[in-house]
Image 1: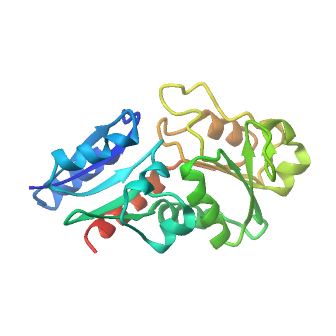
Image 2: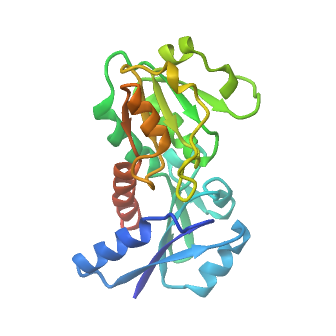
Amino acid sequence: MDKYGIIGNPLGHSFSRGFFTEKFAKEDIDAQYLNFQIPEIGKLPDILRENPELRGINVTIPYKTEVIQYLDELSDEAREIGAVNVVQIRNGHLKGFNSDIIGFTKSIQPLLKPHHRKALILGTGGASKAIRVGLTRLGLEWKYVSRSPREGMFTYDDLTADILREYEVIVNCSPVGMFPKVDECPAIPYEYLTPDNLLYDLVYNPETTLFMKKGALQGAIVKNGLEMLHLQAIASWEFWNE
């Protein structure tokens, strides 16, 4: 029986195992999908050695960039983004892909209006790298927002009403607000949001995050990351079986 799985830490929030287990049952695919919660990326070789039937893995927080050192090959998109969330395994050869960009662009594109020209990216981790490239491909300028001062980035304290009017799309790529810490949200000045703003949260558990609730109260368009997850999971399966 073929095996697939996901590596990350923690994995309690992950929807991937349920998605693929249901897919395998529904489509009568003789395979199983496992969670591999590991304390450090250095445990990956052990997982591969102990599970020779593995044909592919997903990679989630915090290993999307760290995993690259263990791969034999990268797709063009994964190389451009600098992060991997899908690994194809063929006869010991590991090739990295990025399906986050596919899920994100297909998911956000229908919500974009002509006035949506600039975006803020909240968080600077592995997921944000795919979002950055995705926004560029969609024709939007972007700027990172970081908790600490860094060259070429805003800090949360920098954000003003004028900035939120200029950067009308705001994408939360941080885990802030994810279950179980549902009473937390990124520290943006929500009172300056208007119906022209679009707030997109990569978090999908809870279904409506505090970030989204506060945006909706100001009339902003809001969306969570669940559709993105479904789309990137479908793309993962295609990468594993191409």
